[in-house]
Picture 1: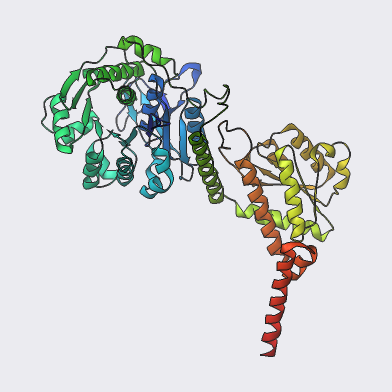
Picture 2: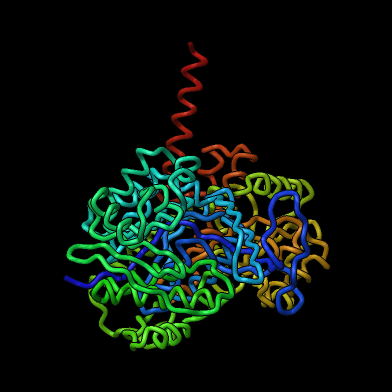
Length: 559
């Protein structure tokens, strides 16, 4: 049996942490001045959230990691996706949430902090989405991690159930107290069900206090929780007090490392990343606890919860006192290396499966955010131009050139006179085919390609109207155009993720939609369509349908 593609896949809070420094954390009705960070800025943005943080530290100490869940189609989500993908994460994310999560964090001079969480899209992830969209991605992992922090409890249960059905062990981080979880995330019965489904539990101090009231020490709490929920293991953290682990034939306390705290945010998440790595390497629990404590100690020595770089594994290894296994290569680090000349059938199947899943997801997100009003306006602009003898020209550079040829032919087939305009030839005389009362459609994913922008300027100076079809509504081309049809996509698919694949589909769909609007606005009939299609199956079908419609009209007139 082949090894799983991912050592761990996690789901939970994915948050843009916005850090502010202050002399102290204030209470209600107080006021205090913020301190600037380096460079005089008063705030600092960083990747955060329980899920991304612990996966980031698991990546640092040597694992292949993936994250799945929901974000919003906004700048915070783009910031998070770019950051974790550059760090070596594989991602399986839908972008149909209301807004990506963020958290203002006040850090005081002693490293203490106050965190205000706005969970946004994380709190909107539904159980049915886990089963219908994320389950196949989950099955690629050797371990599934999730949390009780921002996810609805029913969604946590669905994650744990899918993992159990696939015989994948799970690790549940109980990051908030049960009373808080039941106030905002679900019911107490749902909470207890989640705790029983998880293979390994890692409760926070706040959770332990409520779940085991009156317990005097960490080891006793870990033992009590393991017995109650029948977990394979329970790991309890206590900050400077270290951690305790209760598993089969093991119940130990592992002391913490002493280190000056810069910021205690995320220490438990870094600890969890160390636990996951130790489980992957099949270390004994005392060694896992020591590695996890070392990761937590290194974390509190930096500002923010997400690791500053992969180089921190050197600090963890030094503190731990033992070399760590080799860092697993991520798909991003492999980009510059020669591809396997004879990839296995299973590898090809995985790549194809990933591509088609990604393409369907990207096009679904495009459909959810299409601006129909802009398409209506584009159709009206073209129809208005036709009343003064104007025509449509479609242009693009590179792969969009082929879309432009297709779109021009499609428009003609439904009654809108359109021609292909060669972008580079436009600046060498072909601009003469464009009249001032014409409309030009320019296609570019980035909207910043030098050639297409030069053509756009020439067209506007010539007096024609310009419609941009682009993935970036804030691009140079979009700024020049009279109207923008937005076709954004986040990922192209394929091992390298570079060749234009999904963006071509998105641009083609938007232009096909425009052809539908033009066809409807014209009131095109089967008889007219058949005149332009003298041969072939389409023309034959149009003539047959026109004849059938004529027969129905005559029959109705007789009656």
